[in-house]
Length: 255
Length: 267
Ligand SMILES: Nc1ncnc2c1ncn2[C@@H]1O[C@H](COP(=O)(O)OP(=O)(O)O)[C@@H](O)[C@H]1O
Ligand SMILES: [Mg+2]
Image (tube, rainbow over all chains, first blue to last red; front, side, top):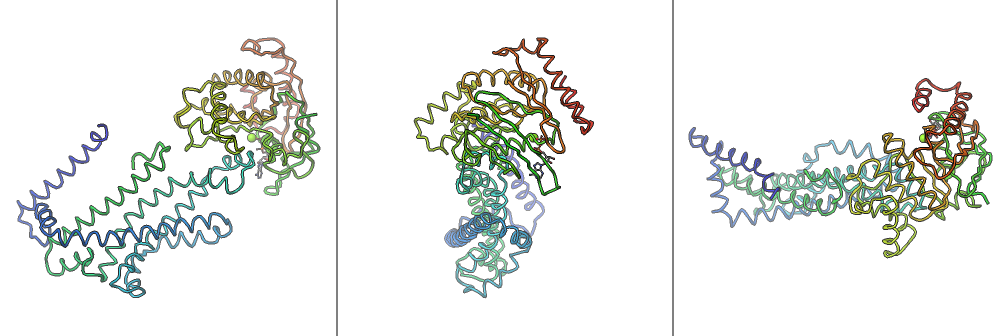
C-alpha cells in the first residue's frame, strides 16, 4: 500500500506530461514528422504489433546476450585482477582510461568483424559497453573491504579464500549491482545503436531507422516506445534481483 | 603458566622510520585484566596487534598460552575487539556473533545454543535478527564483545573498545564488561585513552610513553572486587588515578599539547 502511495507523485507527473504533449501537439498543429501525438504513437504501437513486438524481442535478446556476456566477463576479470594485486595496479589505470572511451564509436567496426546482419555483432557492442563499468565497479567493491574486517578474519585464522568469500564478495555486491543497473541501460543502447549501422530486417533498430528514412515517424516513435519499455523492464529486473540479493543494505531501497 | 609473555619486543616501521615499540617486556597471568594506557601514537595498538600475530615484531618473541603467537592465532586462542565494532552489515546480530563459530566449524545446533547464551550475556536477545545499522553504537560494541567471547578464548584483546562511546554508555559497559570478565575468568588486555577507565577496570595498568613506545611504569590496582559504580568515589581510586597520571606526566615531556589535554580532560 505504501509503495503505491510513494509512486503516486511520479505517476501524476507522467500523466501530466503526456497530457500536455497531446494537448500542445493538437492545439499548435505540430507536424507529425516533428512530434507525433502520444495517442498516435500508442495506436501504431498496437496496430503494428505484429512487426514491432517481435522486432523488440529480437533486439532485446541481443541486448540480454550482450549484457550477460559483458557483465559475466567483467565480473570474471575483476575477480582475477582482484586476486592478484600487482596485476590490478598495472591494469587498473588502463581500464579506467578505457572506461572513458566512447565505445559506441566502435559499433561500425564490430559490424565488419562479425557478420553485420547477425545478432552477434550487436551482442558484441552491448557486451563491450557492459564490460568496463561492471569490471571497474566490481573490482572497486572487492577492494573496499575495511582493513579492520580483514584483520578480524585473520584473527580467526581465515584463509585468503575464506576472507574472499565471507568479506570481499558481500562487500562488492552493492557495487556490482550499481554497475549492473548502468550496464542494463547500456546494453539496450548498444544493441539498438549497433542496429542503426545495419542488421537483420526484423530488428528494432533497423525498423526505427528505416521508418524514419521513409517519414513513417509514428512508427519510429512506436519503435522507440518498445525500446523504452524493454529497457525499463531489463533495468527493473536488475533492481528486483538486487532487492533479493542485497537484502541487508539500508540504502539500496531507493534505487 | 602465563597467558601472554612478551620478551624484548621491538617493532619498527620502515615507512617513516618509526620505532613504534622498543624492548617491551610484559607477562600476563591467567585471569588478569591489564590495561595499556598512553598518549596516542605510543604503540598501544601495535603492541596488541603483535600479541595477536596480526603484525610480526621486528625483534623479540611473543608467547600466548605457551605457544608462539602465530600458532595461538591459528588455534583461535584469542578474541579481539576494535574501537569501531567491525560488524558485517550483511549479517544479522546473531550471525555476526556466530561468525567465529562458523570459522571453527561448529555445527548449526551448537552455534545456535551458544549465540543465544551470548545474546543473553550482552542483553541483546530481542535484537538477534536486527542488522548492525539498526543498533546504537553501544549495542554494536556489545555485539562485537559477544562475538569475541563466543568461542571462549583464553585471551581477550580490546583496542579502545569504548573510545567512540559517550561517557554514560561507556561507564555502563565498563560494569558489564567487568561482570562478564568475572563470570568467564578470561585474561584481558585492554587498550584505553582514559585513566579512570583503566584504573576502574584493571588488575594492573601498564603506562606507555611515546617515541619510541616503551613501558614507562606499571601500577598494581588493589581496589576491592567486585567493583561498583561507587568504586569511582573511593579515596583509593583517586590515589591510583593520580599515580597513573603522574607516571604519564613524568614521561610526558614528549606529549603534544592536544595529547596532554586529552589526558587532562579525563580528570
Ligand atoms: N602500518 C603502519 N605503518 C607505519 N607506521 C605505523 C603503522 N601502524 C602504526 N604506525 C606508527 O606507529 C606508532 C604507534 O602507532 P599505534 O600503535 O597505532 O599507537 P596507539 O595505538 O598508541 O595510538 C605511530 O607513530 C604510528 O604512526
Ligand atoms: Mg590505537
